[in-house]
Image (cartoon, rainbow, N blue to C red; front, side):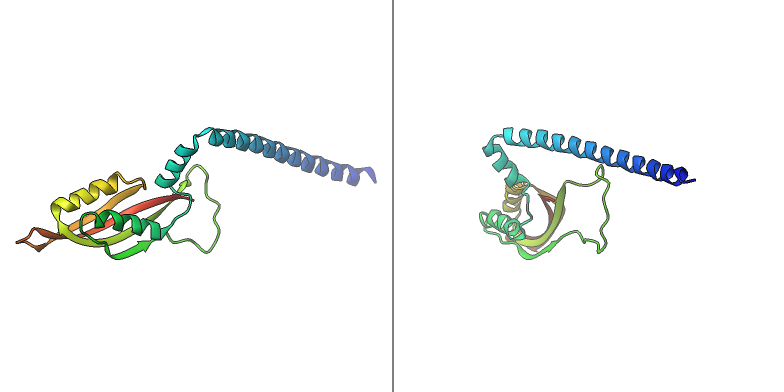
Length: 164
C-alpha cells in the first residue's frame, strides 16, 4: 500500500530526469555548434567582414539609407524628394517563428521622387545598383515634366536590407 504511491512518484521523477538530461545534451550540442560558427566567423578576414557589414548592416539606419540615395542623386544634379520610409509592422503578440521559414534580414521600403534627364537617371540607377549598400528597385514610374528639355519626373520605391 505504501509502495504503490512512492513507485508512481519515482516513475514520474525518472521521466523528468530523462527530460532534463535530454535538454542538457541539446544545450551542449548548441554550445558546440555556436563555438564552431564563431570560429568560422573569426576566420573571415576583418576587411571582408567590414565589406559585408556595408552591404548588409547589422542595424537598420534610415538616415544612412536616405543619405546614401541622396549622395548618389546629387552627383547627377538630382535630389530625392518626398522621402517616405516604411518598415514591416510588428505584431503586439509574440509569435515564435519557424526557424526554417524566418528571414535572416529585415527589409525597409524607401519611396521617393526626383526629376532630371533620362540619361542622368539611368546613371543614378547604375550607381545605386553598384553601391556598397544592397538596394533593390521594386517600383519605378516616370512622367514627362518638360518635353522641350527632356526632363522627367521619377517615382521610385527601393528596398534596403539589414540583419535582424
